[in-house]
Image (cartoon, rainbow, N blue to C red; front, top):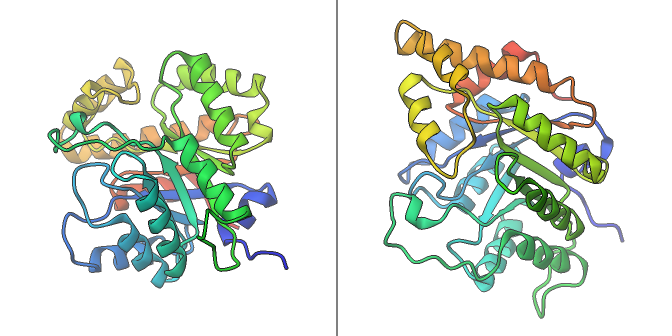
Length: 300
């Protein structure tokens, strides 16, 4: 008997454009913001990606994904190996399926020493490639005594176009594809020249024909936020010309609009790349919605 696939999985297999958004769970226990978020993006994206303590401690990503699923919008749950060993990760995966969540983004996560809780201990029992393999095995044969309830998981991974050495990063992407990733989400794209260099390396391996690659696009909120992001490491590279253009805005409101304009221009340029399968729009929800509307992105 064929296993039922998620709507996102079917969209990926269709060869059509895929559109996601990214959301960070609230830094509190109130579910209302997540329900509102799901309603805002319903019918505008194929799924909502839910980050896992990416910017400090937040509501459990699993709980947040379940709340979004309850609103009728498919979530993509991020599973981060930084904080959990393989037992906890597998347990979360089984629990997620019971709650109607079957799309997963496997990532190693940013090291704790670069975040707000630098004294926390890292786990890294698995890396993101190994986690993808574990979940692929779970889909195929089960993992030990653990079994899925007759439904298939849709697995994804993260791509880092700005990390060096470039050849090693692309080789790692190939491993993610070989272990079962069906889609790859890139870091936010600001440096288009470097992205195109990375894309050349990707296409030389033919990865774009084996996995759906979605370019990350995140509007910069204002000049101060952009400067702070540019100083972070590891971080997507933000060219000086982008920072200067944003700083030319008279105030934070004007800078926000410039950030949205830059994101729309990025989508327009990336849309011309043959083989790119879609976009993942991040950032503050109203800004992300503005980017989707102004760029003319629609789902089918």
